[in-house]
Image 1 (cartoon, rainbow, N blue to C red):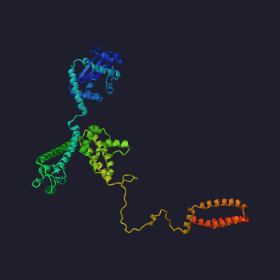
Image 2: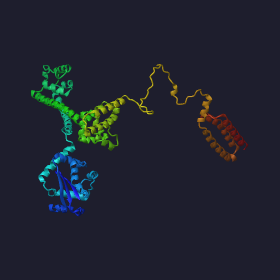
Image 3: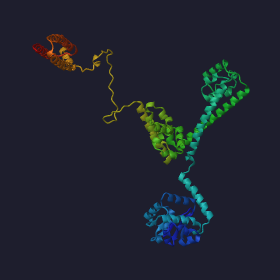
Image 4: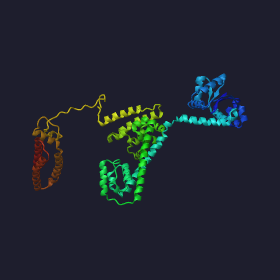
Length: 534
């Protein structure tokens, strides 16, 4: 069995003298405790040394990517092909598949081979003769540096660390400038309070204070280089009637020194912004076109690097910077945020509040593509970003114009609106809308209305009265059968009084047709006759 061992100095091919030792994987390290024991198991057959660091880097990158390099292919053809019947032990299974496919050599990769490689590495200086340890260490260090630079694709123009530091410094400068401006206005406001209301720009305010000093000098000072003519006239007029207190020359000197600091920091901030703009156009031109320099730099800073930002999906890019609000919404089961840092992009800012969510979602999708193109693509132009921005602007105009699409049909045609025609201004009131009853062609007759009322009113009211009175009358008949005829006459009089009252109640409460009323009267007369006969 042959063993392929890669080093920073070159390729080494060993021949295994005692293959039975490889079967004892757990105790194999004992056979390599000393160089003498190691030489009994392995013998160096060939060593191909790299000519320079460039060749070593090419070989190392090929091994990392699982490819067969030129130098390795040359060695395998020269040495291993002569003994094609023997197996070749390798440390990478993927590389073994490539070797078997191209050179038709049987390769072996197993836990025993991995343990053997570790043992060879421990006794590498003794097994590889003619290679001093200092040279091996120097070549390992050089190859490590070259390989790390290659992996990172190191280029001074593509370092996004500068962007992260520049945007962080820019934010810090803005905070400090804001504090200094507030302190300057408050400090000088004790002496000349009216100046703060007239001059609203912070930089112009500090330049005016530095040039004027004491407010008594305003009348003799030319401020035309700093302020417009109208504002300059207002400042001079306000200085004459100012209500501020008197301050010493030492106080004015300290205020002027603070104004110098504000002006210097403002100038440096402008210079830093230009540097950030140029750096962003060099590193991420498409991202810059999509969302602008500041928003793009903040996205890169928040993600850590451009490559990390390229790994994020569009939904993450959309809410990047609003993590606190997102987790609070998930915890309280409320609506999640629609945008984070991307809210400050110009496309989202010029949209109405109703469409901000839609535009931020579409912008995040196109921005994610632009980030990946900048991070992983080879071109450095911004054509793709410009095309996507034009599409987004067209979509934004469509949303703002309220272009309503038809739901049915093709879905592409715009909804057709009826042509406006000027009609008479005289309007007639239409009472048909007041009633919920369906309209009829002819007027309804009074009899139909009465018939409907009789159908709607509940007739059972009279039915409940009859059964109540009939059993009562029968019981009274049974009880009064043995009584005197005087009581019978009183009952007859009472019933005679009740009979005319009942139809009145029925007439008042429920309108009933004439036929049922006549039948009821006949029944009552029969009952009265039967009682008289009794």
